[in-house]
Image (cartoon, rainbow, N blue to C red):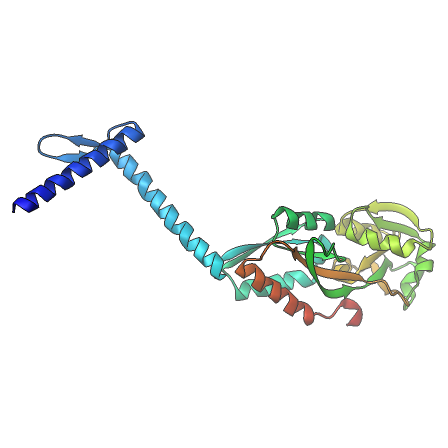
Length: 282
């Protein structure tokens, strides 16, 4: 009995010291004490509420970290060219969401150079972009090739042709995409041996669609964007003997390992790309 009493006194002394130290650290009393009892005061109740929330937040964070590591839950950021988010990618994302509803995929649709910068800055896990980036900095895998098409008003003389060549397009009023866009890099290569008659430059696909539908001029677009140009006033004409294609690459940071869910998403995109039939071959 004496040993039990001594133990209780020891515990009481230890708890009193612990409470006193805690009250000194927070700067106010947490308990009201008298000779009969010790109980939480208003400050103590508030303190306990905050402590419980902190513990719950810690527990939630541990669960989230574990889920992220195993790939059961998580977030993936995909940087992508706007021209690639028109036809193929939306279908792929919808299928992925149905199969993995706990994985959140965020899209960062921006210019090709900003897609790569987002990878380097850590703001994106993966990027879908045109052209192979520097192998010294990025890991990349080509998914498929995107071909080029002429678009013009249905009343335009070239609209009735089964195919055209670049020299014929160079003679027309040409509406081009602005400098800095992915497709502009390729149209610059196409026009290198020719002298294109630029009448206007735009950045957005919807703007281009409106101008061509109004018969402002002709332009060159890629197969992945043709869905945007399904318009009663617009004709789509393939090129004849055109070897230039736009390679579509899946890009990651060479020095950064993907999370489990991002790695599985990478494989998912590759699988879907293998079964994708480019517009020109349909």
